[in-house]
Length: 606
Ligand code: AGP
Image 1 (cartoon, rainbow, N blue to C red):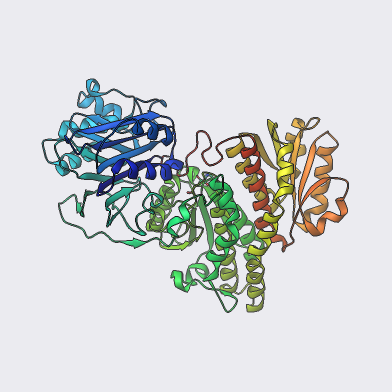
Image 2 (spheres, helix red, strand yellow):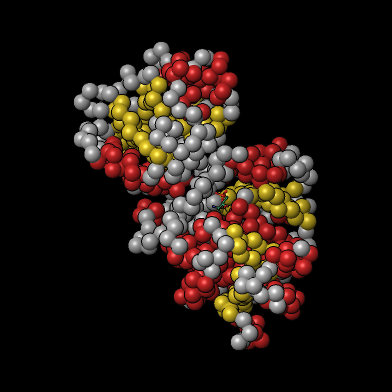
């Protein structure tokens, strides 16, 4: 999951590329590099290094260079370690190239075309550059088509040729590329956040097409040389919302944005107090004709699916599966034309989820997706899309995307319940009214974040930590535990608290930190006895508890009180509190909260 940028126009290209790479760095930050065409002698000069974009910026600052055409890359290492040699761009002969994706047959290509002597790195990407150079005889499009015909795997390729003027070429398969033409020139990138500085108009580069960026034009052709008119879209993000707005980290900003993100996501989908998807073009028949539901997603998006699963079972009494996208295709899933598949993805580019959606559609399922990025690959693959309006989510740890995904699920459940005759109109409106309380309830949690910071300080030095809860509390904690794991590196595990005594409780010793979630009134007594079991074995317990349940535990336990909502909505305030817990632990440990080690924001490799 790398970040790619290309620009040719009137601006100083190194500044454009470096600024864009900083916005794309959340996609991968093992190394960074750029290649620019020297305006004085036409040479393509490559500067790259292991480390961050700031390190690359320092290298570039030490030399004067005039250029208005170039490409750039931030890397999340797949083939080859993290070092200068393996950083992109790769230059072989007349070809200078950056790549996002995985070439599965790169070793065969090295042997088949005797490329070994051309290679300086261990990467699959440099093999593509060498193969492209092998085929290049002065016609970039022909050489690209020949090269692509030999590749097996996923790729977004962005190329400059030494003997071509200031033109950038690109082609892709699965890995994303968006592009635009604006007053300042032509630009392409792995995703929208890098284009926001110049414009809110963009188009998605179709797979197996050749894109040419010229200073004052973009030329798009299919592999049969037919010119294709780009289908421009408009991003509805505020242009400056991709910045930190004064927060130390994007994660904090995005946690704080959640009340507005929820309001923006549900606002225009409620008419007369009823859920309304007419503007999204999602028909009720989608909800009334299906016999089962299958939610497909990864990571946090999958955790949103777990909450939806609980709601669908308790309210709709329907059969519903939640599938890890990476396991889905290999688990012989029962999918047919009576299955409604709901794919959930912030980026809309997670390849595990994308391939799972394609698999499900081949088996006759209809697919509705809940996506945050307009025009993304999963959105384009789906029959219907409900976009969240979270705005750009830059921090690797997903926060506002998760809660806005939940808010869409609440509307889906309400719409399904009404259209399937489970809810009367009044019951539906009552359910929706509770959802509409969410922004204010979340603001109350955010106002109380100091207390959460105090709890965070108590667990800074923890190596292992347990999170325990039952029912929806368990789903809440699976997500809370992932947040803590991925930004603070504490080995946190969420357990269904009733399961502890079947083995895991053997791990509880004196002062083992345990976070409990108690938000479900009907489970209160059971959860309390499980909490007492771990406390009696020395655990240091803090409880995130629904306010109206807390009186009974005053003075007995340390508690974070959560503003009251109906039980099935408590995941919303509880999640914000647990996001803050993870954020404060990570920031107090001095970590780069937005770019945790080994991670990337968009996982475009299987
Ligand atoms: C969550 O904090 C992680 N960044 C990760 O689990 C993420 O939710 C997952 O990779 C799915 O990403 P998507 O929503 O863009 O498909």
